[in-house]
Image (cartoon, rainbow, N blue to C red; front, side, top):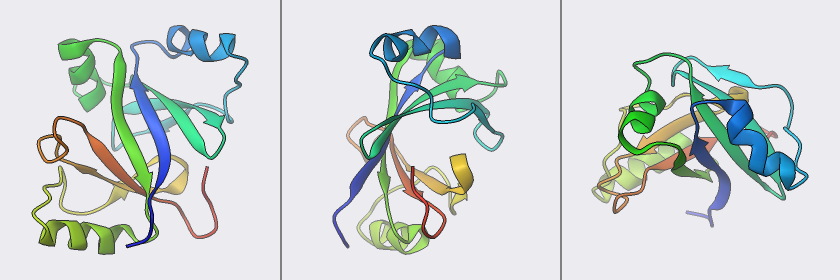
Length: 139
């Protein structure tokens, strides 16, 4: 395995405009238009900070994982995500070490990526996402 890069930090918010206020005040600008990710039931607004993104996640349906997170915990840090070159191979490697994933196979993510989430119990209470970007693309 090669060294991982932090891909993004995801912040759950019930409203993208309200959630954006701190980042707007810092002088950051959204990295393109907001994007819906139907497989996750979220709308994403991304801010580029160096090689890493800050992603604001707003639920688009009441049964989405982000809606449930907001109901239980309110707005705030939802997960950290790490960039990998081959998501399927990384899932296989980690499963062999006892890692538990929330899904059996990669699912579509933002900007044409493929993603997989590790169970928070495996991450010591932290939800961890692995992200594979299309060849030659990253945030």
